[in-house]
Image (cartoon, one colour):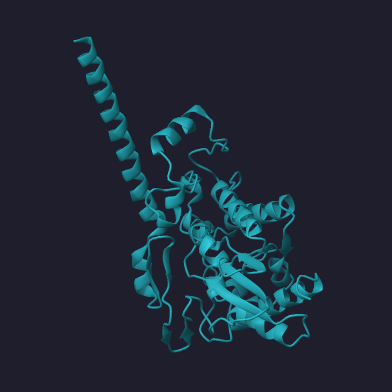
Length: 347
């Protein structure tokens, strides 16, 4: 009888633990689909498709108008075979670029470097996907590093800033080993054990309050993601380069009704025309970019400073707060090409 009771108790405990594990995995699946799998966005951009790893990717071989996706799923021409210096540009819509094949900044960098006498030919890959945040980029970084880039330029942060409300900021940091993502099948973990470790304080993650104000905001999720991306790039023996984020709204803004920033848009969680709060949140992200560059000894190209010095006519370089016009991308691309050569990254 005692043995039967023991077996019965073990069975009940096993069933309870199994049920708890299933519940946690189902919650993880729902949260993951919300964070990464936004199928509705792809409907707005016919060159994108749902992807079970990063949420959505470009359709290989898509050609329509002035948007061309090569057979590897990157915007631009087909990749070149042979010995060369390969530069991969990781980012969102600000990397993917506007209409016109010559307008994205990676293409401008390619054109500028082609005019110089470098020791090896240079190929620049546009790996930008509209709408991606650093959360999406984590799930695709291993695939991208499979193309053996020598240099990876990371231009990221805008979608993190616009999509994660400051006043309802949630802790989205986690060991990126979700059971429901194909890229992480090699690293499956027991969710229940991870939850117990987290409750016990063994996860070694900075605590995050439930709410923030712009004055005290620190984007921990962005810090975690960007650090992990830089780490993965270095593991692949590639050289990471970080860009700061050019913006339409200058730090020296004195008049919110300045016609030069009439195209400015703000995140939904910031009150209309509260440019002061926006700048506080922006600088929270900017601080993280600079901090990670310093801590990881990563090259930092201060693209934001190039546009910050423009006191007049800023509207000619920006479509809105974060997206550049073709002329803005020309300035950005030329700055990056000059920095790559000036710092002897490309010789």
